[in-house]
Image 1 (tube, protein in one colour):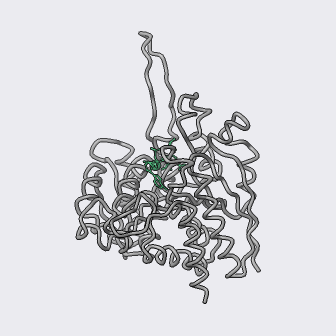
Image 2 (image 1 turned 45 degrees about the vertical axis):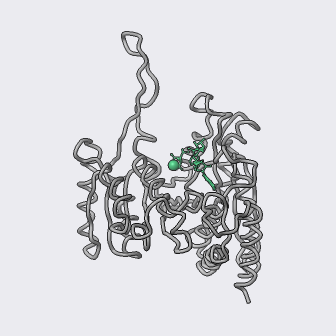
Image 3 (image 1 turned 90 degrees about the vertical axis):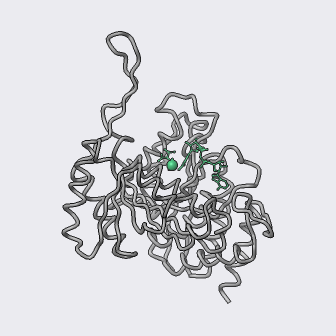
Length: 363
Ligand code: NAD
Ligand code: IPM
Ligand code: MN
């Protein structure tokens, strides 16, 4: 049997609740597929600040580096919102991404037929939507220099961030995107703001250049404002989207809502020679933390992405995805995806329903 070392980063808010469900699911799946998984838990985010004063303790990063894959829940919360930047939970997450070199963030937004009525958009708009957002994750305005709050000559404060991409950074995320499009519908839309920003002009030039290596892929370009509008106007026009860090953050939340709830969407963050981090697109949902209300499905589906992209166990991944469809077919819903006639469950009960479904799928 294959043995894998998985680092668990439960983080804050609903994190511990949803990761518990995912771990229970992974344990049952491992048993069914003759896989052995050793889980090691490490602190990150607010939980790590409370324990050590540091949102990404060296030991946590090291544990992640030494593992085959990392399953992260979410970080952040009101309690830590007013700390200095280097002590914020979000800084820990960015440090993890940078520390592992996870430049490619895959965020699939696929509408499940069972959840069409949970979408805030009309059935005919969202039916059949299947989009993959490829978000650059270790560059752009999140990491560009200079950054900081400086004092001008007149004594006024001035906040600064810098949106910057090198050719190399654009090319490597571009390649991931073209390859991703090749395995999907063969269409790639690059999103930028090349009409205004120099950094985007370079982005568009490089992506256009790369296209000659991928003659089978149909490449198009959109400005980010138009892309946001098109995503809610006619989302079915999109197959694969590639964009920078900030635009990808925003557009993937918008794409998430097409599918009914951000509580459904998993993601994979991948680098070149490092373990991937698999995490929901949503945050720590402090407004519902500790109430057993969270939807654990984005976390569970992140576990499936971990099996597929991180551990090369596609059949095990598929069984998790089938189990999710099965519980939805049974009418089970958490509050965020509830619709009339369905049965509302809490986070834990949803986990139990998933385990039952996985047991059924085995026979
Ligand atoms: P959020 O995604 O945490 O929550 C937005 C809304 O969606 C809330 O109403 C929340 O209750 C709901 N929601 C999110 N996930 C849900 C789930 N699984 N089930 C049911 N409902 C769910 O975004 P926010 O409120 O803007 O941010 C909260 C904190 O999370 C902040 O500190 C932010 O920095 C952090 N954050 C972390 C990550 C991450 O760890 N990757 C991502 C986004 C935000
Ligand atoms: C995400 C989050 C993070 C981001 C924050 C918490 C740093 O919004 O994973 O989408 O902006 O990348
Ligand atoms: Mn985000």
